[in-house]
Image 1 (cartoon, rainbow over the protein chains, first blue to last red):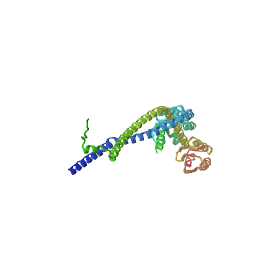
Image 2 (image 1 turned 45 degrees about the horizontal axis):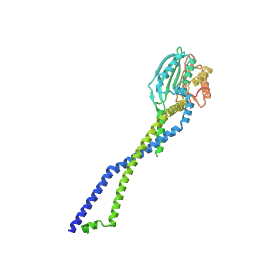
Image 3 (image 1 turned 135 degrees about the horizontal axis):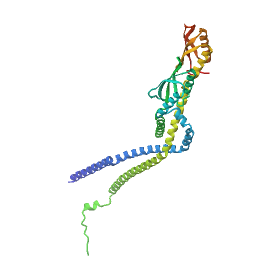
Length: 199
Length: 184
């Protein structure tokens, strides 16, 4: 009789223990584990956000400095934009080149502008030009071309004596700033700053 | 007179007797359940707190981003202009000008009674000069003058041929260290 009672108690204890373990397992799987994962995720997000906010606040604190910098470079903006134009300024640059040639007393033989070529440092439009005129006029024109408002890199040049004057053949590249490079660099600097902060 | 009769069984009385281990187990179970519930509430509240904090930070970030946007735009413009300036300065140093060199060559040729038919200058540093002269001596003098005027330059002739009408046709090559720095 006593043995039967002991067995029954043991079974009850085992069932209670199993229920407790099962409840704990369910509690871990459906509450604690997702909660800890979510907490970790939120903590990471908060750290990232704090980093970004610090960066933004830092930038905001430099407002006066940035405005001052802008005031300093603003005056030179038209000159710099004209000296190294962007791709979008191509029509104006070609128009200016055409005007330079047509304004001179020289006879235009050929004027070829090639395709815009993208380089690492700058983009170029190759141009080849042939004009006919007196030697002095050609030298004067070459000087004007060298002082052209928009940056040019001269290549091979030739002055040849011809019937009725001299012929100047010159190859040069019109220089353009690579598109979106400055903005990209600002973005990269910001990302670097953020990564440093995280580290 | 009424007499109370104790009808409780012996087991019933023993089960309700004060017994230390039973009390301790009961207290332990209460403690575990309290800790369990308290812990759960704490975890839940902490999670809610973090969610609220994240939401607040996102709002702060959005406000700051609005304030910083014009500054970023200015910075991008400054960066763009600085880049143009740097590139312009670098290319200015790299750029070659031929007009000065051509003027010098023509001036020296005139001084030595030479007639030039062609000058070709290349960025690699070689300049080819072709022309005619009444004497080979003048060509040699012209070469000496060129070397004197263009420091570090070496003038060599490719040919000097007697052509016609008592004139010599010639071709010279002027090799320079720094191309296009010609002129006076």
